[in-house]
Length: 255
Image (cartoon, rainbow, N blue to C red; front, side):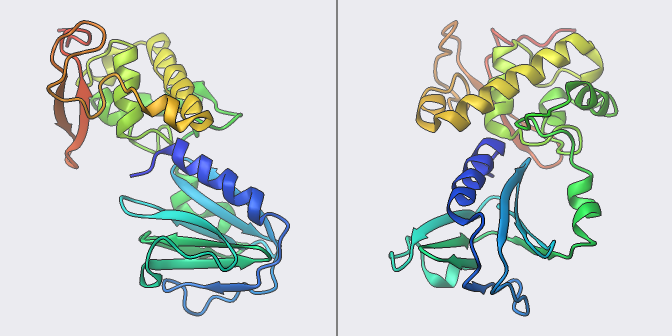
């Protein structure tokens, strides 16, 4: 599933191409009755793992990639990299066509629905937001005191934007075992975890190749730790069996 850094990068790319442009063509297999032709795109924003296209009449196109979706941007007339049957949404403006492939979530929120939509309203502070509030994120994490930190960091109601990659990398950098209960971590430690996650995701937004080319633990099960040479391990957390990579020597589970 794309994490907050990937979604923010996509939103910025789409915003540069689409903002202030008039929609010339819109189609969606998920929204067959929606009509957006003639509307002006005001902005394209990211909120955690959600991407929002805002229009001048107050409506908001809400998309979520889950495990399979991705936005592509093409010049008008350029050949698509995937088949048209996989397109869930097509937004065309002068010179550009934005295509959403394979995403399961495509919703068009009305002006009255958008500000109080429950899916978006429940999201915790976005770790990549310039106005990120660590105190509010810690307060929300405290409501998950009985959860393991490797699981709690993925709860988008506490803090939004973090996924399996940066959860694993953050906990390694902070030398915290992923099964450590949230209640065992003081506020200063949680603040340090959030700060490291924020810095890692920001670095990834700035340079995907540089930040992901050499992960410390993610997707390296069985390989030697780059810090201590111990074997990287992998475990499954929560009822969703989410994958977490860690170094048992650098991240010991404390009693």
